[in-house]
Structure formats: structure tokens, C-alpha cells
Image (cartoon, rainbow, N blue to C red; front, side, top):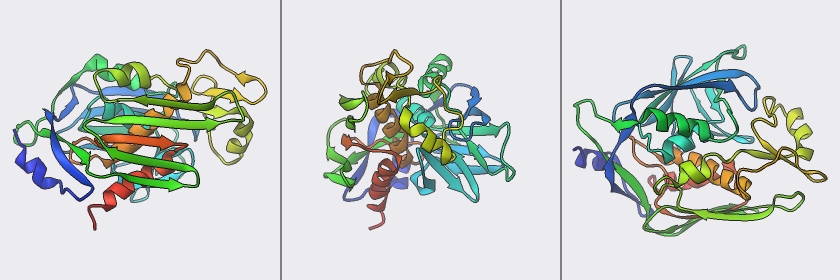
Length: 316
């Protein structure tokens, strides 16, 4: 088993230490495919998840261009996480990456075919499906995983980034903070006092056993009805509907009940966080830091800024 090589490829810092997590890197047993409407462009796309060698990690492939699922390629964009490289952009990657990270699909080639690309052919988006990660998880569970082999046919030990000291990023009254912990734990808080969502907190160990698959993956994206027109005017959520989001109105409450969980919006924020923090992964290792991560009123921009802060610790 290739352990020393993996350790040598990853540099630890004062903030982060890479350590074995007592399992080998994995990949898909066979191809997984899903098609559907995209949330923001409203167009259609197909995603094929393909097995990949150990150490290759997760990366997207579109229009003959490859984009690693890494914070180095993350670009700030409204209401989603976007990866960009050499003129190619792939939007709304967070739900898919969340499922791959939580389900231990460490190495994967993600091919996207846009069925109606824009004129440039350099912009595409992952389908929103039902607004959660449930379908990705179900398809991964159905087809299964295998140990990923490197180019020499060897297993590779999977490493995880352990946090050595407290760290935080913030903007106004929103923050992401993390504290050293022997396991991954996430506590997330949201506050929407203008609608029935109100104030919610949810705490979990999302990578333990089957917790993510049972308690996080099916939580759908959500929005406030009174903000829909503004988002449409901004060129967003063109593919949004009551079939792929839960919508809450200030005057009428939830427009498409029932909720799958009483705190479904908060659980969905954890789903997003796992996907965004997966961008810290490298060489087929774990992306989510081993820490107690506490978030209040977070979003994709703040999540990815936190990952950049961790990433910058290796440059100092």
C-alpha cells in the first residue's frame, strides 16, 4: 500500500496536518449517469461519473477541458459554486461534490455534456435534479465502490486534513469557525426571521456511518418567494421550480409542503458546506477538515473563503 508516497505529496502546515484515516482511496465500480434541468441557466445537461485511478482525485471534463475539483479553480458566483479553468466554467457543482465527498468517491472523472450550450460552448452547469443530493447518493449506493488502484496497480492509503488550531473567517455577522477535534463535526445556524424558516441550528457528524445518506442528502435547496423575481431579473434560477426547491413565503408560509425534515433548510446548508469544503481535497484524499466546524449564516462565498484560508496556510 502506497502510504509514504501519499504523505510526501501532501505538505502539512502549522494549521493542517495530513494523517492516514485507516482506509484506502476508493472509486466507482462503474459509470453513473444522470440528466436533468439546470438551476440557473434553465438548460439541460448530462453528467457521467467515471472510475478513476488512485491519486487522480475528482475532476470535471467538459468541451475537451479538464477542471480539478479544487479550491484553486473556484470562482465566486451568486447562489452557487463555480469552477473555472482556461475559459471554461462549470456552475452549481456543490451538491454533486457533496455526495462524492460524503460517500467516499475519492477519485472520479466527471464528464458533463450540455444539451444546449450557450454560443461560446464554454459554460455549463450540473443538473439540479430534485434540489438535493439524494439521487447522486442513491446511484452511488446502487452501483457501489471499489478500492482505487494507482498506475502501478497498488492501493493508496487515504489521508485526511486534521486541524491543529482554531481558525475562522467572517463577513458582517456571518462566520465559519473550526476547532481541533478527533472527528468531523458540523454545527450550522441560519436565521430568516422574515419567513417561517426563522432561526435554526443543526449539529451532526456528517461523515460517520450512513448519517449523510439518511439525514443530509435528501435536504433540498430553498428560497424565499418574495426574492424570486429579483433573482430572475439577475439571470438566476431560470430552471427553478417547486419540483427542485422548497419555497417559503412571508405571507403564506411554505408553498410546497411537506418538508422532509423540520429543519430541512439548515440541513441543506450542511449539504452545501460539505460540497464546498470538498474543494480542499487533493490527490484523492479527504477534503473535509477533521475538526468541529461551526457556521452561522454562511453561504458559498464564505465557505470557499474558509477553504482558501486553509489553503493559504501552506504558502506561508
